[in-house]
Image (cartoon, rainbow, N blue to C red; front, side, top):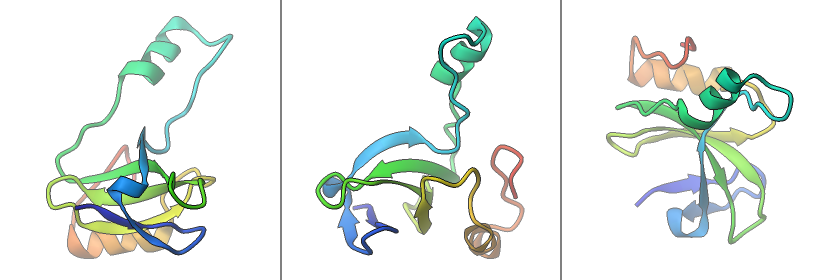
Length: 109
């Protein structure tokens, strides 16, 4: 079972208390965007075997959205952090690099 710590209220919650929100750090496009940009936003997602960054909502707790870095193969969680940041924090990237040398995701290492 996947267990994540909410970075806002500090509670460790299992996946039944959380709501998944898909891939993290996407540039969202709305009205006024080109059809190609909107298509990319809607349909082109990473689905890696390995390190992945996701959005989660603490639905049965504080209700806030946050990001999680985890391995899709082992369910190992590298950390959680605020949804208001534009890229994974340095300490989480370092933690991933320590355990998975040579990893990369969307040009982030």
